[in-house]
Length: 180
Length: 180
Image 1 (cartoon, helix red, strand yellow):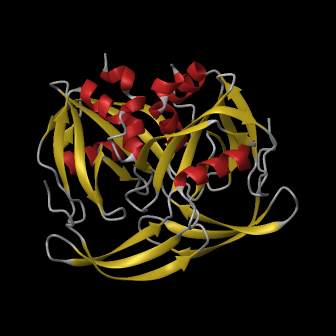
Image 2 (spheres, rainbow over the protein chains, first blue to last red):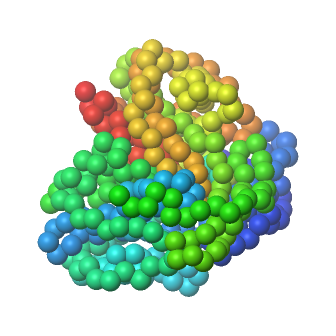
Image 3 (cartoon, rainbow over the protein chains, first blue to last red):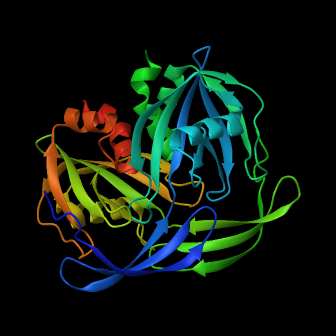
């Protein structure tokens, strides 16, 4: 087992703060004894939800993302809010983005999305027995909802067509449930 | 087909710049006619390389990541540099992180890693016929190299044990080549 904390923080300052994430710059001591700085996108984490309707279809969204100036295939997702548990956050995002309500929500996995520059942890949930209703989106959220047979959604992910990486991984991590 | 650019930039300013990425804040016009701001982690993109040795083993690294204060299972990866083509970048990272030289490099897929907040595009390469030598790491790069049979590496990814998301997705996108 390697040294548990090979890089030690000597102090922090914030370069920028927002509702969504902060930019924190740390002075650090490296294993060779030298000092340096490391800047971290300090992120509260997020949930990605793979929704399966009562008819056994996977709910994907096709969303415009300003940061990449592109349309992306995704599953519903959203950043964590203070004081809201991940499962509750997953239920809220499902309702907000596709008007979905799930009979059952199951935790599948967690992973880091950008561990070289930021602290975001993605938590993946599988939502089953989903009934779709009217979304409650914000002005920034521009998307269409599409339903796919599970096998087709998985094939899209395997062919590299789900261009939002965390969504593609979320689908593939749910593969065993989708092909049940 | 939806409106191609539903959010329009009205102007930009930089909140922070670094060698690795910039923080850019744009004034934007939303589809409902209202104005707002959108802050983008402006990133040059990165390559993730799935290396297979001449003996048919997958090369994984177990790396300490300061941004998440955790040890992560990953494949070799690194950010793009100005004027360096992605394939050349993939060869450099392979050499730098695991001392690897590949007989063949094949482009597999691309995806966005953080399209809600940043512009990073990940490009995945499969490197075959890899011979391992002496790594040429920087002080910030703290890692061990481990070899796994392809089936085991894929199982780790499917079970959610590859905790660097882009690395897990890179492995799963290479599944058909790994099981050849």
